[in-house]
Image (cartoon, rainbow, N blue to C red; front, side, top):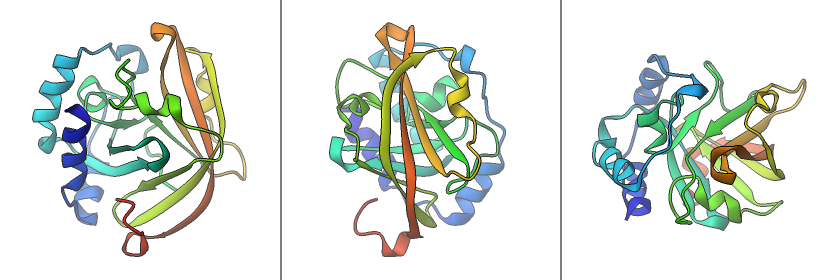
Length: 190
């Protein structure tokens, strides 16, 4: 049910102007303030999701995951989709880092990422362009390994982070940039 509700939020069409406005809003980037959520809290947040400032969408077809991207890592953001981990990050530049919640139910929020395989393609859009990345690294890291969010000189990467081992560690996936193209030219990805 939650997966279907997230899909509905993705189906809403956002203009590039909406995305630009939402990108200008203030957001919470305090990782330490993120709390575990219950399924009931996620359901409540999904019902109110249409009022949240979406700035894009992420799709991982190999694991049937598609979620909205919202600015910041506030609890309300992470109850709905993927949250940006750094202020002012831009798709297609540096290390674009996203966080999402994990649940034991395999189809909720970032939970499907546990099934992702090296070589899988990940699509991210800002509703203007699609940015295609290829998964190159998947590993468990310490919750304190925030260096994984750092930009790497002369590299364009995508980093996805979710909880592991009951919150004491993190699952980190990194993907290398492959190409970008207009959303109009995307083949039914979003």
